[in-house]
Length: 300
Image (cartoon, rainbow, N blue to C red; front, top):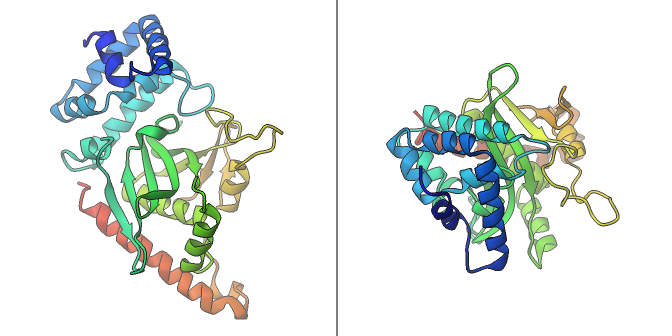
C-alpha cells in the first residue's frame, strides 16, 4: 500500500496551514482504521481503470475518513458505499468512462439548450469541491458558471437493488443569481430551476438503470450548513422532495423520490395556462431525449 503520508500529500495542500491540520487528522483516522483503509486502497488496485482513476483522484480515501455523504454514516458504511459506487459504474459504463467521469478535470455534456444567445447546458462530472455530499454531480451551467447541481452516489438499498442516492442539492452563488434564475425560469416556460436539475437527475438515474432514487432529508444531511444562524432552513429538503412526488422511508434520513416526475394532464391544467404547459412539456421531452441519447453513447 502507498505510504499514508505520501497519499495524504496527494490529497491535501501542505502549503495551507488548514490543510496541514486536515492531513494530520487524516493520518490519525487512517491509522485507527488501517485495516479498512488498506482494503479500500486494494479495491482501487484491482484493475487498471480503477488504478488509473485513483492516481488522478485519491479523494475517495479521504471521503472514507471523514463524516461525509449522510448523517451518522459509519466508517465501514462509507467504505462499502465507495466500493459499491465504483463497482456499479464499471458494470454499466463502457471501459474508461468510470475513470473519465470520476476525474476532477473531465466532464461529459448531457444536455445543451437550443437557445443561441446563451451557453446553457448540463454536465455529468465529479466535482472535487462537492465531495462531501457525493461521488458524482449533475451540474447545470450558464457559460462557465454552475447554476444548480445535485450531488449523488450509487449504492444498493436495503433490498439489494441498485439505487441512486442524492446527498445534496445546491443553487447558484453569484452576485446576480436572482436575475439569472429568473431568466432561466422564463426560458424553461416557468419551470423552476431546482425542479429542472432534479428532472435532469431523474433522467440520468433512468439511463444508469437504477431501480430507485433516494434523497437525503434535513435530518440526514451530513452537515448543518443548510441551516441559518436563526435555525431556519436555507433549503428544506423534505418539503422539496415531497413536492417532487417523494415519500418518507423507514430511515428518517432519506426520502424515496420517483424515477419519473409526475406530470399533469392537460385536463388538469387551467385553460389559460395550457399553451405554456405544452411548451414546457415539449422542453422537458427534449431534455429527456438528449440525456437518453448522450448517455447511451457511454453505457454498455
